[in-house]
Each structure stands twice: as structure tokens, then as C-alpha cells.
Amino acid sequence: MACFSANQLYSLSWRFSVKPRPQNPNCTRSWFVNCRNRTLSPLSNSNRRPSRASLDSTCVGIEADISERASTIRELCEDHIPDHILRRRHKVEEVGFVVPTDVQQKALPIMLSGRDCILHAQTGSGKTLAYLLSIFAVVNTQRSSVQALIVVPTRELGMQITKVARMLAAKPAELGEEACCVMALLDGGMLRRHKSWLKVEPPTIVVATLGSLCQMIDKKILKLDSMQVLVIDEVDFMFNSSKQVSSLRKLLISYSLRNNRQTIFASASIPQHKRFLSDCIQQKWTKDDVVHVHVNPVEPMPSRLHHRFVMCGKNERHQTLLSLLRGDAPHSAIIFVSVQSEKSKKAGHAPPTTLLIDLLKTSLPGCFDILMLEEDMNFNLRAASLSEMRQGRSYLLVATDIAARGVDLPEITHIYNFDLPKTAVDYLHRAGRTGRKPLSDNKCFVTSIITSEERFVLQRFENELMFQCTEVFL
Ligand SMILES: Nc1ncnc2c1ncn2[C@@H]1O[C@H](COP(=O)(O)OP(=O)(O)OP(=O)(O)O)[C@@H](O)[C@H]1O
Image 1 (cartoon, protein in one colour):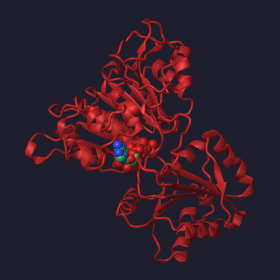
Image 2: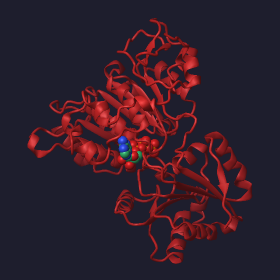
Image 3: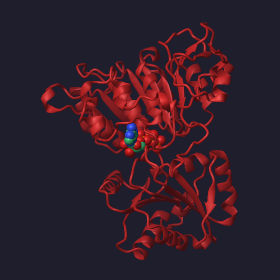
Image 4: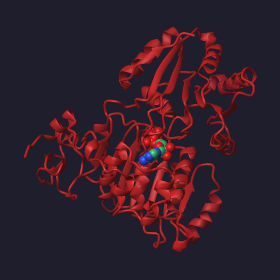
């Protein structure tokens, strides 16, 4: 049997599947590979706090062994998930989730064994279904208490996840049992209605934004003592938000003991992930044997994305965008625009989103539905925009970065950065709003409109995210 140090394992990215043995609370983070059984197991026991070097070893960035992979999601989950979710012609399969994606393949065995997990995989790779399935493996609909909580950064993402969770939770009438109840507790919602609902009959699963969640907890309307699974989606974004971070830290260390709770973090980007992993353990946000499931570490964005740029003068951006749209004739696209600065607001200028929408409506009449999504819109208008997008017609969505995280619109074929994003991470999430069919090879396009001075910024993103942008000449 071959033995390797954990760091060797990480750097060499061995092609073995991760199948941890039952959890040992005293283990350090050293592992060996059992080649025959293809398992990773702890080498030694110790009560010591894990050292920095040993912490690195939990980053087992191991490639999925395709020859060994389970062929269906049902195979992966069979003994864990209620039958009505997996059985033939029902839920998971009926909606097209038959073959697991790489992240589901790797993470489900770990999460279904009850271990804490950091899901770190490309945009559109199916992280949502992975953590929802592990929630359904744990919750008991006979108990009247909140047993799983999913925390999200925006109302839009919350609504989307609630929809998938409800779809999975619904039981066929003939079973005659209580369906699992999923509540969306999102900023901009009718919190008064939720209060009475929470008092009368606590839901099993809550999907919440932090603002609304904290209100309900502070007023002692929502109790989380029975919480068994806590998911923080877009975790890097949540920790980056100065408004949210203290509530998030409090949530992670209060309300339920971490040893009785499974904690799952998800994102396509976790900058300094080794540091984050170390913080998770040191700050006691997770159990000590948390696993970092890092899929495709050398390719942070889906390979079916084709990255391009067009160089133009400062005042030629609008015309350049119109030429691109006429040439590409996208089915549906998002055009990302910067948020209006306070200075420009004070000067009474129209927001860049509105200016662009006016231009598109006059220059491309009747070609697309033209929609908008930005922070300053009220919640009803935001919801209306999203629901129009889901009607299946061709549309152009002019949006700020509010649409960059988590929003799943599979029909989007093109992304345009009318303004460059501020950081490489923002580029990754904007780009990730296309190419959202995880098992498809269809090419999708991400095009940045830049001035010559901005070329070096884009080059920096290319280096950081390891992709190549080709120049388009119009
Ligand atoms: N096993 C599967 N087979 C086919 N499609 C799937 C499967 N799992 C998920 N999907 C679909 O893939 C799309 C992307 O999934 P999801 O929204 O979970 O991505 P994500 O990994 O959370 O991305 P992001 O990081 O951008 O939030 C969704 O439309 C979802 O329905």
C-alpha cells in the first residue's frame, strides 16, 4: 500500500475518489491513500489543534475518477434520501437531474456522511442541488421545527433556491404524508405574514437573507435550536460584505452547537481558501474534520466559456455594444453595467442602466424584451424582471452586479461587460451567468468592451483566473 503526505496529495492532484471513513473527532488533518479501496483516511489521532501545514492537507483537490463515478444521482443518494425524491419518474429525474455533475459526484458522499463541507466549484456546476439533497437526507418532516437554514446574499438567489427546494420537497398526493415545508425569509418580503406562519407551524427548511433572518431571531420569532444543517451560499461574498459579516459570524457560532450541526459553505470563488479553511476550524464555524471539495482548481471557469474583448474609444462604447449585438444575435444576454456613483446621482444624471435601456429600445426595436435589474429598483419590479426572463422569450437584461451571483438563467448565451468589473472574482461570477448547463458543451460568449487603458486590467483578470481573451475587430 502506498503512503503519501497530505501536501504531496494536494499538489499532485491524484485521481482518486474521496470516501472518508466515519468521522474521528480527534484526528489531525493527515491522510493516506488506500489504493485498493480508493479511500482517503486519517493517519494518526491527536487532540492537538491542527497545525497550519496539516490544515492545508484538507484541501484535497482530487480530480473525480470518471471511471469509478456513480452513473446516476439516485445511485449516489439511494440509502439517504426519501424515496419520493429519487424514485423513477419523480422529482430529481423528472426535472432532468439524472447524471451527477462533478461536484455532486465528489461532494455528495462526503455530505451524506454528515461531514462539514466547503463546496468550491465552478459557476453553474450544480452546487445547489448537491447541498439540497444532503439537507433532505437529514430533515424529518414529522418534527415541527426549523431543521435546515440556507443563507443567501440576495432576494433573487433566495427565491430561486426556494423554488428548487419546494420542487424537490413536494410529495405526490397519494403518499398522503406531510410535505416538507420550505419558507423564504427574504429582504423585501411580507415579514408580518411570515411571523404568524412561524408561530403556528415552523417550516422544516428556511431560505433567508441575513437582514430578515436576524430580525426574526432578535424578536425571538424564529428559533434555530433544532437546526441540523446550516448552508451559507456565496460564502466569500457574505464574508466580504461589511454589513453582513458580524451577523454571519454570530450565526456560525450561536444558535446550535457546531458538533450537532452540519455546516456547508458554497461558492465558485473562495479566495485564499486555505486561510478560510483554517479560520473555519479555529473559529469553530465548522467541525475539525471539514472537507474542502475543490473541483477543477486549475480551471476556475467552465471551459465552454469563450472570452473576447473589443477595444474602442471612451465615447464609442454604446455603438460598439450595438454592433456586437447585431453581429452576435444572442438568444438572450446580460449586459453588465457599473453601479451609478453617488457623485453622479447627486449631479442629477440618469443612471447608466436607464441610459443604456433607452438606447437599446430605440436602436433594436422589437428584437428583444429589454429588462433591467439593479439595486435601486423596488423588490416588486425586480421580481417582475426575473419572472419575465423565465418566460423563455429572447431578452437582453441590463444589470449591475446584483445579477452576478448565483442567478440561474440557463438560456443566456452571451454576457457583455459594458463596464469592466472591479475584480477578477466579479469577472468570474458575471461570466458564470452563462454556460449554465453543466453537462453540455455548447459554447457561450463573454465579451468585454474596453478602452486601450483598460487592457492591462483585463490582462490581470486573465492571469488571475487562468483564461485567455481573444480580440474581436468590428
Ligand atoms: N445533475 C445535473 N444534471 C443536469 N443539470 C443540473 C444538474 N445539477 C444541476 N443542474 C442544473 O445546472 C444549473 C446550475 O446549477 P446551480 O445553480 O446549482 O449552479 P451553482 O454551482 O450553484 O452555480 P453558481 O456558483 O453560479 O451559483 C441549474 O440550471 C441546475 O438546474
